[in-house]
Image (tube, rainbow, N blue to C red; front, side, top):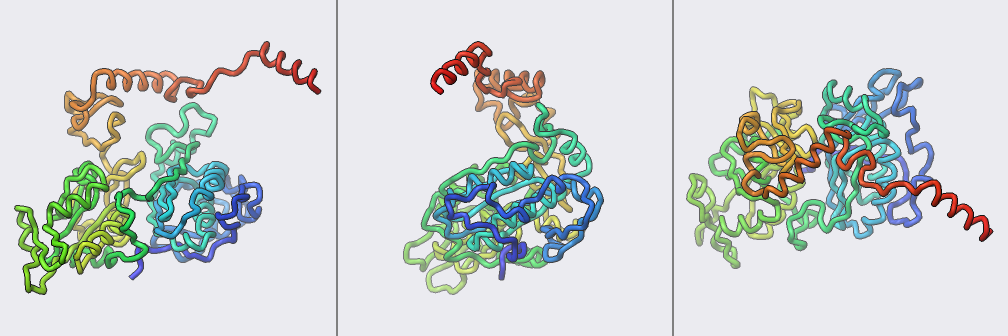
Length: 435
């Protein structure tokens, strides 16, 4: 069974990333969208859709406002990618040229990212990534952008000191392409989804699986994500980072090296389901889920390496489930935390009600904001006690800068002052003498 739905791998031909001479300048011109992609087009151009309903279709981009409509696409792919560093510079340059914002992580085990831009621009970036055959078949989830966010996003330009504003999905003029050891940090190099992974379950079949009393449902996200929402009856590992998940598994299940005894050390009602006694053929059946599916791939690979025999995970993650399963049939409770400025989404992937504490980057509800420990851009009930007064005062100073200038650091954005005219004249004179 495949993972999430995949964008077609037949894409335009770009130079391979392993070529150290690759630059934006030598991209085939027919593969780099011109400025027309960001305005109303006069001719119809075929565009590859990335959303679930139309992912395998080509639609016509006519002279309508669809050319400027924004999309948010999260994607990942595990692959053997030792020369990943070669991709960073050309990918960042392409995103900047096409005004695609967001964040992308590159590692020797593959790629992981979430980007925002116009349909043409996002599709061009995805096609460029997949021009390397190792990265073909990206697993991706697309989220809509509301008309209000559209207006806010397009109301600013890259030269505006306000960038895209606080409420836009991503900053208009900012993309990060980072090099890391892992595209999702588990801290166990021996665990590789390329080698083995659990069984994917489509959203339409997920309810039946997790309703089975012999199946334990595990949320592999972090505690601050789970408090926003989770599936009914799911186990919360109470981890603050994904790298803590293996330790939780080791503590929760007494994993014998021989593999002939696997029992739960927990005291909750699920413990009876998680027992494998000596001489018994009954093994725990585990169903896991996360936001978009990437953490489940590593988590399922880890469980399989530790003796679990039946490991399932939700294809496309919570986002695909909320997109495809009607609310009336849903077993999801609450909202889903997302790693962009929408903070949370509900069924249909519409923006949720949670806000972000800029002091700790964690989600807060309307009730949390009523707390006396809440101070905008400084602290919330979850970080108030852990922050010193010095840290809080620095946060207040940053907020004052933002309120005054629209950016943190003032109008210079932390850059060094330009050289004076006198210095420039002196430099020019010295250069003239040298020539």
